[in-house]
Amino acid sequence: MRDPRISAIGKGLRRRGRLMAQAVGPPRRHLDAMPAPRPAADGYTAPRAPRLVDSPVFVLSSVRSGSTLLRVLMNSHSRIRAPHEMHLRTLHVHLSRDFTDDAMRALALDKEELEHVLWDRVLHLELQRSGKDVIVDKTPPNTLVWPRLHRCWPHARYILLLRHPGAVVASLTARRDDPDHEGIRTEVLGYAEKLEEARQHLDAHVMTYEELTAEPEKSTRGLCDYLGVPWESGMLDYGSQDHGVFRPQLGDWSSTLRSGRVQPARTADPATGLPPRLTELARAWGYPDGAPPR
Image (cartoon, rainbow, N blue to C red; front, side):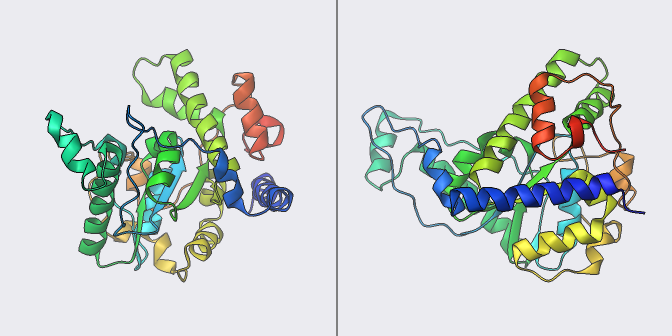
């Protein structure tokens, strides 16, 4: 039976999105407020080079929000390649000699744009190897650098996967041997602030982990509509397909994920105390009274 509180969350998010669109007009107007690339000391910023992948897809989420489940569901689609976490933001270019910068500048490149070219090549290579035509990166820390992703790929598409912050705190706490409770709340708040920033600025597809686990067919149908691909029932049978390795730093490796079946979301104790700002964000995302659905 569908949980009416979960359905209320989805309706609230969709209604809020429509009202926002009516109030501010086309979503790209928001992008004027985004941080610009940092120019070199002398003011030089390289122009954007052509991209091999024009419109990649990025899942923006906090850690412990079900992004690995979402990625294996998407990867089970015949046209969507969603590999393990790629951590593009940690791939850097080192200009090792004084004259290297001058040489690259003569080619209308700088360090940031060279890194963007590298990131684009990695996505293109993975897409070619897969034989599919849509590439998805679901690395949670991408959420922390989403403005740079947008600079790299102005036509990128985004999926915002929300989960009640209290449930994220509970999941992180249970996962760590000697949890630093204050540190965990600070970490979750950092992700939540960037998610809210992205929600306000990007024309993204917003979904919740609670909806995904309660109504996987409905959620994945909406996702496929956003990505412009037909829904496939095989997406829900992700356990029958090869999704690569499951291990730390590359995604979730829990028994729940390895079960091959979509399982109900675990919820946090409503009595669990959250910082006021996390409670405020939970309410902004449609969670009644800031409390997780049960």
